[in-house]
Structures are given as structure tokens and as C-alpha cells.
Length: 398
Image (cartoon, rainbow, N blue to C red; front, top):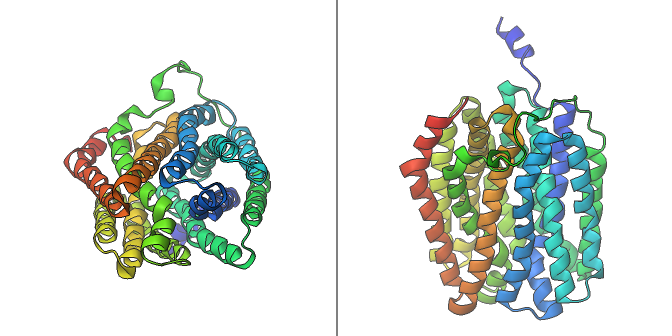
């Protein structure tokens, strides 16, 4: 009898799920090929200072932030496959713009425009991933889906630094990013999705079509956690090079970060499957906070690399739990809105982290910027423990 139950269990890794998982990997791998080296590229190619680098790079996050609420509306209101393919095509196409950007202004314009299809494609791709999962395996599938981001984050910077170390050409990296994104587009073009009814019973101007209002406290927590990540991810390469003499260690930092993410997702998926969503989130935010404290307090190689692993372990528990919380707060026809609200919150936090972190680093130094990241992260942890946990348990739909 036990065997029959096991055999009849709905399949997790169905063909559509594998495709959107792989396409999501391509999105983030192409993204992470460039992200760690763009501050150095702007500094070496255009002579941009720290504050200007923050302004230029935050444009990407700003447009992703603006487009994501509308992306949630679009994927809930129109055929999701069409929305996904159009946004993914534009995301791929704009990589070519980096090759022709001959000035800081033109690069800033292209980088800012690129954020829009990135935001739309990540919302639509993750929403399709949730659609093709059986409800009984949805929480588990969300956790594994995030592994595609994590693996891309693990190997992307390392591959980028290896390639740059060999050819010392940013253009080669731009071309590879373009080709990887194109491969993801081809994969998604083969999706075979069932027709679904689109939302027609709500007014298009209704605010809850764009933002999941019930998730406001969880979104505020996510902004705080993303702020800290935005500071570290953007300025880690310059900080390591200028202050610690680490010229080739950025890839190892992201590798350790992603190892922590992958390990914690694999461990945490069992408890997510058992419904322990709040427990996963509660433990994850505290572990990540400890990681940011280590990074801010220890200005040496042990702090640099040790914090990466600890932050990864914390975020790997926290992020899929929060995504499941957003989904469980939303009705089925608000699935795209729930996803976009989560990602909008992350974008706001990362964008603020880039801007504020760059300004603090310029005027007070990197150490104060990283202490700022720790302080904002702690605010998010306090809010979660004092209010957001109870708010979720009160308003959840499933």
C-alpha cells in the first residue's frame, strides 16, 4: 500500500517545469556573468567614481521595479506563454546594447532599459513554474526552482572572472551573456502549456491587481533583507580589491554564498513540504543577519569568505519560505501579482542598497556601508518577529 501511494505521487520534475527551471538558470547566469564586473568596467572604461557607479547600476533595478507590478497584472490577465516569450526576447536583445555603448551616458540608458524585460521575464517565468507544479508539490517546487538562481549565482561570477582573466575583454563577456540568454529563449519557446482562463472579474485599475496588499509587512521585511544584499553584491569586488588585496576572490565569494543557498534549500525543502513555512523563514533571517554581522565586523579574508557561506545558508531558508508565504496569501488568480510583489520588494531593497551603499562608501568608507547593511537587515528581522509572522498566520488562505 505504501508503495502504491509513493508511485502515485504527482511528478515534480515534469518537462515544462524542467524547461522553465533551465530558462530561469539562463536568465540569472547571463545576469551574473556581468554583475560582479560591471563596477570595475565602469571605473576602468569610463572613469566613473563610486557614487556614479551606484547611480548607473541602480537604473536597472529601478526599471525592473517599475515594470514588475504591471508584469504581475499581465501574466494574470493574458496568456502567460506569450507574455513570457516577449519579455524574454527583449531581455536577450538588450545584451547586444552593451557592445555598442561607447559612452557612460549611453551605457546607463541601455542598462536602465534592460531592467524592464528582466523584471517582466522573471515574474512570468516564475509564475509559469508555479502553474506547472502539482498543488501538493508546490512549496517543494518553489524551493527547487530557486536552485536555478543559486547555481547560476555560484558559477556565473567564477566563469566571468576566469574568462576575463584569459582574454581581458568585457566585450567577450557581453557576447557570452547574449548567447546564454538566447538559449533560454529557445528553451521557453518549446513550452507546452494548457490554456487557462484569464482574470476578467476585477477592474484593471484595482490596486490589488498590481500589488498583493495583504503581503505588505512581508514585503517590507524583504526590502530590508534585499538592501543588505544589494550593498554587498554591488561593492564586494571593489572592496575586496582595494581594501583586502583580493583580486580574483569575488568568484569564490559568490561560490560560497551559493553553496550555502543550495545546501539550505535542499535541507529546508523537507520542512517546506511539511508546511513549516514560518519556521524556515524565522531561522533563515536570523542566520543571514549573523552573516552580515560577520562581514561588517571582520575586515579580513575569514570575514569576507565566512560571511558569504553564512549569508547563503540564511537566505536559502528565508527566500523560498517568503515566496511560499506570498503565494499562500493570494488567491489562485493573483498568483502573478503575488510573485511580482515579492520581486518588487526585493528590487526596492537592492536599488536602495546600491544607491545608499554607494553614497555611504563614497563619504564614509566601505566599512560604514557594510555596517549600514547590517543595521537595515536587523530592522527587517525585528519587524518579522514582532509582527509579520503573526500577520501571515492570520491572513493565509492555505
